[in-house]
Image (cartoon, rainbow, N blue to C red; front, side, top):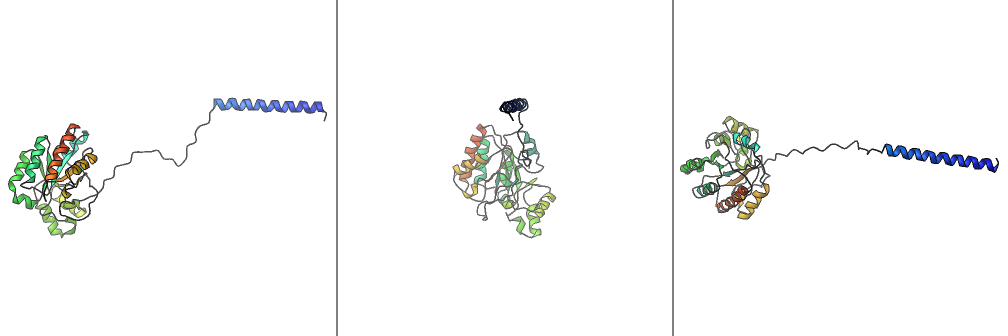
Amino acid sequence: MSRKLAAVIATSTAAVLVFGSLIALAVGRSNPPQPTVASNVTPMSPTPTPTPTGGDTGPGKGGADPDKSPGTPVGNPTAAAAAGNKKVLFFSFDDGPDPVWTPRILQVLAKHGAHATFFELGKMQAEHPGLREQILAAGNTIGSHSITHPQLTAIPAAKRHHEIFDGPTSKCFRPPYGASNPKVRADIKAAGMVQVLWDVDPRDWARPGTQAIVNNILHHAHRRNIILMHDGGGERSQTVAALDKVLRILKSQGYTFPAMNC
């Protein structure tokens, strides 16, 4: 092959390569590459809020401090009606009525225009009958907390039936310690009541200090939550002081505090 022919071939080859590169560049600009989506990626969706089970670990009752239990009582008209209000909280008080602490709690509630539901023990109600009328007259409601506060899941069927059916008259029942099972729930339903537990347990029964109770409630209180406190079972000065503080703060934030329809 002559040098002249070789030069011509080399020049032609170079021209073809340059022309091809220009075409590829033009195509790339007009059709940019699309991102690759991994085949194992699942679109994110809201995670449902779990409904933990819990129990009442009130004063002197021993046992572990369980996670909190479901709040809004099933079939409760007041709770259902409040569903559209993002700033509704339900305060509840267990183990009373007590002749010292229940009236003081009623005074604090009235001071802030708040109402609550008192889950009473039949034994305490029988010993202090006038307090029931005082609670109701102030616009609050009363739930049943059994007669003597046994663990309903650990007693014979006849005694369980007695504790549920013969306790304080109400449409709401809160099992002691929050201890429940299908048999307990069946008895509650047969007695014409709904089971009502709670969302927030500030452990006021353990007397951790007024500010600790306040901080616990403010940290955990959310939409339609039921807050567990105590007006019986022991010395409740921290509960009274904490209630006064927390109602003032939450009221300034726009919360309202109705009683449950019990």
